[in-house]
Image 1: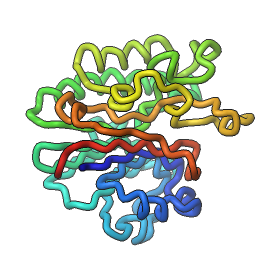
Image 2: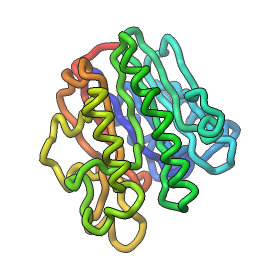
Image 3: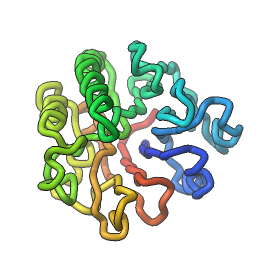
Image 4: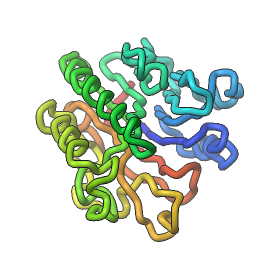
Length: 260
């Protein structure tokens, strides 16, 4: 069995103070993909780079306190790829890929467009260049799991207040249509939805810090494990961990009938 977890940390140092690494030791994922490190390499302690039983590989943003992704694993990968080969977005630290034989696991942080119209345009630019990258990945003879914060709620079932968010970043029609193309045209699989096609509140992975969103479970499902069909078919169980909070996101864990 292979356990893969994805979690947007909203700052690795902040998440560490909230017990994320203690939880990680007990959860025992084989691979943990993290996003939004908000830290440079020099900001990481040895315990953050290599928690007991793990080693991490990271893509840091050039801008301090911004973005950044990583992959922690128990087994050393055969190969690690940092970045997607695009100057604009590689400067923002959004992509780490690790390969183990016929399996690749990617930690992805798709841009958010909520802060300004300029950032929404950057999000669209990323989506435009990432779609053919996804097609290239699908053309490989490889099983792939892309973990991360995709910053898009796909369908009405994926957020509490969908009616009032139809003109907001993260639930725009063109964003949702793009994600539909990922699934329908390229045949990537939304693994959580494969296992839990009707889940609503239990599926949310992010809550705004405004109001009482967490207390009232007014959430969004924007963190995904999107996989090639072969490994997606081996997924046995999926869950969102909400018993403890490490950031404004919750960890999504999926167990696959797979061995590295």
